[in-house]
Image (cartoon, rainbow, N blue to C red; front, side, top):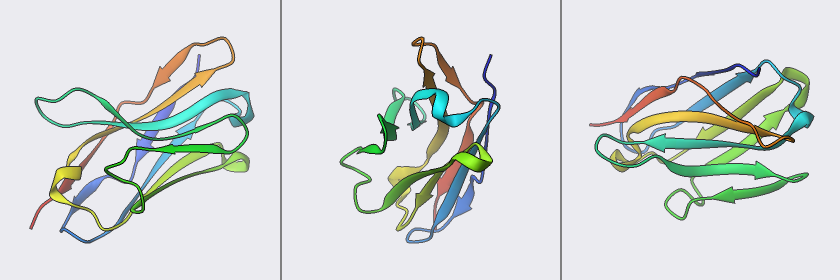
Length: 116
């Protein structure tokens, strides 16, 4: 069983930055993929950014150039640096990992609100 705990969410103004963190109970190299998803009120959960394979990354078109996903294997932590935040980035952000058996794990989510 893998436990994920997100942190770093909050209320910011448009144009500001936040860094989300996801602490994992498992060893990060044991995960097939790691990523961040978000869900805004009334909308489906969507993929924001991910790391798969050795160091391949994925970004949703809406966040390319503004968000950066990274990981620190020594700290078993996944990060999402979010710059130039927009009101449409407002959502609950979830950390997700998939292990080599195909089992997916989710964190509890952290709220990000971008508002003036």
